[in-house]
Structure formats: C-alpha cells, structure tokens
Image 1 (tube, rainbow, N blue to C red):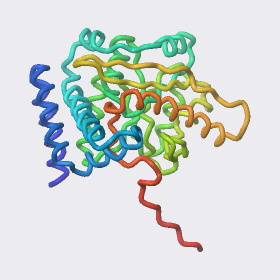
Image 2 (image 1 turned 90 degrees about the horizontal axis):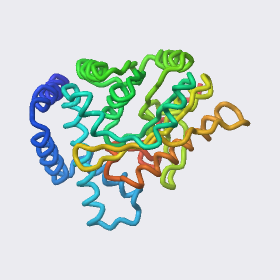
Image 3 (image 1 turned 90 degrees about the vertical axis):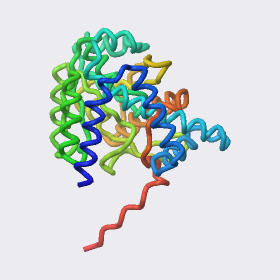
Length: 302
C-alpha cells in the first residue's frame, strides 16, 4: 500500500504540475518547501546538519535561513523536473548557462570519451536536458534502483524522454556498458557525491572524512576518458548556471586504488568549492559523512 501511494503521488506530480503555468508551479514549490521546513522532519534536520558542516561559522538564525532556502531549492528541483518533459528545447537553451564549456566540447571534438561528474547541486536533470538539447549530444547515465519498481520505471522513462540512456545502478553490468560508451568517444554523466555501495573511496570533505564513489575515477583510468567535475547553481527563476571544471589529473604513479583515491579527492575538492559558493543549492538530505553513518556489523570469523 505504501509503495502504491508513493508511486501515485509522484504520478500526480508529473501529470498535474506539468500543466501549471510556470509562476504558479514556482509558488507552489515555495509553499511546500516552507511547510516542510516548519515541520522540521528528518530530511530537514539532516539537511540542516549537513549545511552546518559546509558553513561552520553560521549561527542558529543564519543556519535556519540557509536550511529554509535549501528546502526551497530542493522543491524547485522537483517542480522543474515535473515540468521538464513539456518544456521546449528553446526555453531550456535560454534558461541554462554553462561556463568553461570548452573543457567538454574540446574533449568530445577530439573523439575522446568524456565523463561529467556532478554533486547533488541545483537541477542535474535540467543540465542533462540542456546537454541533449543545446549541444545535441546524447549521453549515458546511471539511476539508483527505487522502490517501488513502478517508481523507478517512471524515472527511467522520464530521463529517456529527455534524451538520456539510463542504466540501472544495481546488477553490476552498468560499469561495462559505460566503459564501452567511453571507448567509442561517448559522453557519460554521473551524480557522484554520495556512495551508494558502501565500498567507495574515503575523501576529506569540508574537513571530515566521507565516502564517494570510485566509479568515475576507475572509468577514466580504464578507458582513457577525460574526467570533468561539474557544479551547478540556481539564479533567479527560471535561470540556472553551471561550470565545467578543469580535467581531473590522473596520477602517474601508484596502484590503481591509490590513483582512484587521489582522483576522487580532486572531485571532492571541486564539489566542495561549488557547494561552498552556493550551499543552499546542495540537495543532500541524507547522511554523508562517516561520523553520521551507522557502524556496519562486523562479520563473524570462521
């Protein structure tokens, strides 16, 4: 019953919000965000705790205001995403501006595979739609398996409608497919600031240890693809901005694990720079730092 309710609510969002005029959808999103912020549920409290690490000198009032702005940014993501399938390519091209794009276009022009690695900043789906619409460049991405399965199917269909090839995160076959796309000179886009496998690389993130996925670094080493961090931030509605950062350097020495750790730290540093500039647009309502994660049970010795 709970799974059917969850799927039904998302289905209503996609069918109803897309029919609303843009200003009405924006006002609805702000109202929902403010209501959630006042309730101070687990997601809001987690966001506030995460932002306290990003802005450690923030007093209670500033932190509360930042969390409220963060919730507004988060619901803006959902309102925009529900409306993306009915937006024109012209409006997407007009409302998104990406700085230092040459890092991406030069890599693609050279026939070299390119990996764009992003944190949960602003609207990564809108950025993806911009890539397929403005650059006329298809790409491959990976989606987390959601429950219920029907909700996952909705997300896959939604992202495919925007021109993305979507692979399931679970199952183990995604890495090989991504590697083949990159060796053929293709583009891969990955949201990569939270480890979903519990086997990621430990990085220093805002002065504390956290884990981030090793996949982008491993793919770059195995295929020779260019690994580019990307950060996004919101302007006044409906504008969104982004920056393609310089390529992550592949260390010349060390084991594959050591090289992956160094490259993932470079990604974390680029993410931290973008998040520090626009903390309210970082949609991290989950536990991230190791100090916040529940300890894993130890395996019994045999």
